[in-house]
Image 1 (cartoon, protein in one colour):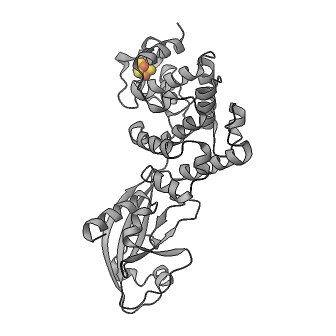
Image 2 (cartoon, helix red, strand yellow):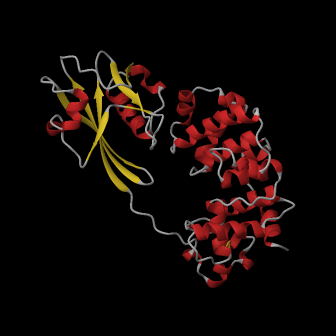
Image 3 (cartoon, protein in one colour):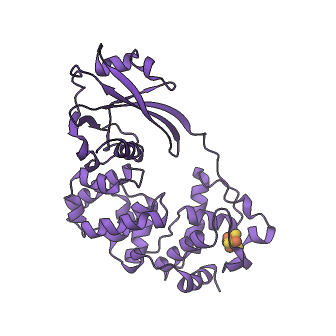
Length: 354
Ligand code: SF4
């Protein structure tokens, strides 16, 4: 029996019942793939259900308001996925009359769809013989074949893509791909693989050599960068100021309080004299600044030390730069915000009448 047959037989008996496994609609498959990138199934599932319930077709998604989609995405992280998803939906409407391209090659031409997603859609929806290579597949293959090439090197990526294609069952690509991914998720886990239940134990070189913990090999990434961000909550007549992030960086499209970065944490007494503070708020005499909330927020590549200051003044605070809007406090929850900002809103909820 081939490696693929072993894995498929195991999958048929042990697979989890997941909603996106009951469809071959390319739109739903695409949605599930975007949602599940860098996200656990349990966390992604409610989002998949919410999105497919509200936007039943790619046309409905393409017509959605950016802010509504960002709000619905809130809490899932990696917000550029939501922005790209919306972009791609609009391109599919504009350039493909709302019909998903059917082949791997044509899917790849769509901005926002890379090799992984193109392989997933073309194989799951159209049964094209394209091997899917995600983190699970890298791990399983690196262990079965004891591959020492780092999975995050360009050479490694080519080797794994080739190998995945070689072992693919051409007649059952959808089943094969799903089975291999499921094996990685449920049995060949990153830390404690359950080799006793593995259908390819006898074929697995790392199992035979007792070298499982050496795989997959990865080039070590730099340690996360520290960032210090000062946020300002200006409460005036039950309103405050927020702006939407437009830079091409994390949290693009989300709303946030006026803020600036500093090289280290700054205390309330000193923040007022910072140049960046003065350029935001001017030189105000009767300004009261109080640090009310601190959060150390961990992202994949950065650690954010976020200090939230409350500003109050009997004077009118000078108009903030363009882009800021004044919103009622009770309406803040309607805006799409980062998880960090959401933690601050929860704090406010507890400490005021929001
Ligand atoms: S035998 Fe163990 S290490 Fe090898 S593929 Fe199976 S679960 Fe992974």
